Image (cartoon, rainbow, N blue to C red; front, side, top):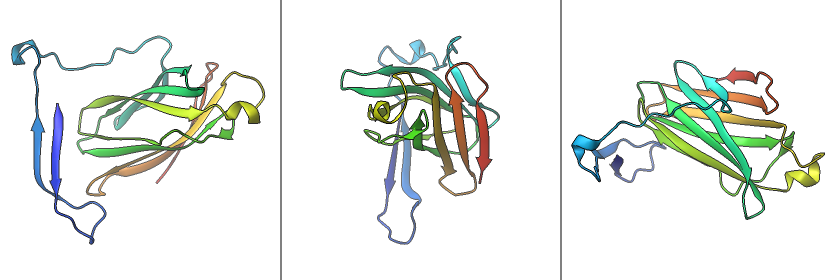
Length: 169
């Protein structure tokens, strides 16, 4: 499934309304073989948020071959709105990290996606040890019409303790 939105260039609004929208479906093995995507939770997944609005899971974390750190995510939109999600200000073990790129995504109602946040390994120079024990970040979400939105700050302890959460909007 792919989404095509065509916008008229406008300087009057940050989120101009599309002049054309189309969802495109491609079925490599034929439409009759299509099975909707679902993510099966694994025992070692870390639940960051799971409520009537969204599900955010940390589904893995690894070092990559480029000397950085990757956090694997799964995010699902439970609202009836198309929502833009963005993760900012990620800290590993209390150290604010410099990302390779900021992670963000745009999800239609009832859809989900995988994501990867990649960070340089400079956090090791600023913290004690080589093990990540805590991840903190801000999650921003907003609909295109600005009728829906929130800002949540999260701290996740990777040693099995309950994550602390604070919502602000």
